[in-house]
Length: 579
Ligand code: DGT
Ligand code: CA
Ligand code: CA
Ligand code: ZN
Image (cartoon, rainbow, N blue to C red):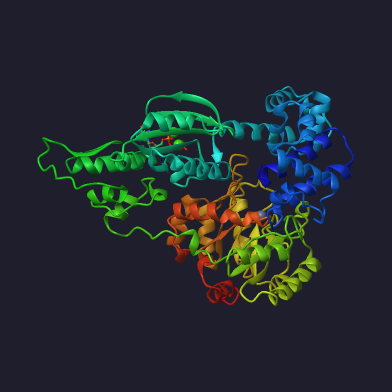
């Protein structure tokens, strides 16, 4: 059992106890427990296995015992029993926008709502609207949220598939009959969400590899199984396809199943124009074609692109949006890599809604080998996230200056994620912001403005000289909440004009600003900051998703400010205010 699994179980216990009307102290103990497990800077599951949990602040005896039980046995009796009192589908309700535990409890107790299907019925029949707290637009919003979820029902975010892909690839590569294994499809192309995962192996014994694949412990059910391919669902519901080909076929199959379909069609046409035929198994010259060429030996994808007089095209770029032309002219960008990042901005601590203290965050950043860490806790208007008022912020700045003296190879920048208020003014005065090293400005409420008004609001905010960067431009939560209405192109123009950096929020839930806009932003001269928006030490890892999205947006290390060494990034942070 991973620490995430254990934290989820504590979180769910808290929810279920709340539904049962248990006292709030008990509920809060589990919720705090979940946060501690998630953000503990050390191997908490190892400590739990060895029963070495005493002395961890906020983790009482009852929770320590439960954590030990989970680590040692892989499950928790208390939770299994509690869960059995409720239907399985109940947990779906917690993912619906606008439905907190209180509303779920009311729906459950008064209308017997125990699933999204029940909820939809209760909303459509008018029953839900009669409950207290369900006035105004609540029901309408719930129905919209359900519709949005239905539309994206068979998609998964990066965080739901990334660890799975690593695990399956590792297992496939360990198989003695497998010479190459890769993941293809939308995952390899770095899409923000995927429908299914497409694995490919090269082997002389397809039957044996397929047989081993469908027997993997994480396989929940087998959808189809043939001599060279299989489709399964794994335990979290993701469909995984596996195809087995020969070593010789591997590069062609890899290119084909990586897609995109549009890229494939264009590449195949290019082959045809040169008297060649290309499919998922081979690249051959068309016999009766007037100037059919001699095909050079092809061992990998780079050889394949070379045979078509193209530079190698990174998988993230294969969307037929100009990459083939750029490859022909030798002007493809050298895409950013994870190793290029030297620091990260926009991170939260326990001062607002983060799970780790300032010191824990700094230690974690230091251990990751980063040169700088930007703190940006919420500002006072984000009271639901325990946003800091002026006094607490000034105190935090002092703490950061003090902590900086303790680290000689990590610089901590004092920042704030300042709310953009409804009219585009900011939650802190210029006088306060001028004392910070940088400011991330973000919209956290009043999402339902008309496009023109939202655009004006954001542009007004970034016109402020102290707003260093714009946070999560559209506010989308992938698969859960659509973007609010905003004219992204106009915001990009304003960012270019004012010298404001735009964030690529690296949280797998956001990946906002979307990759589709970065090519334009770059042309306009707007710089990117890949921001993990970490709410725990673990959360710093989100940069992995951010870098994938940045690559998909054609970005190089030169376009991303947190690839700069410390001395240069300091200048960049100061540039806008001294214009
Ligand atoms: P998704 O929807 O997130 O699974 O997206 P993909 O791109 O992974 O789509 P998928 O799994 O249906 O197919 C994997 C790749 O196989 C796709 O990117 C390109 C290739 N492919 C599938 N069907 C066709 C087709 O009809 N024509 C061509 N040219 N390529 C195809
Ligand atoms: Ca796929
Ligand atoms: Ca597929
Ligand atoms: Zn935010």
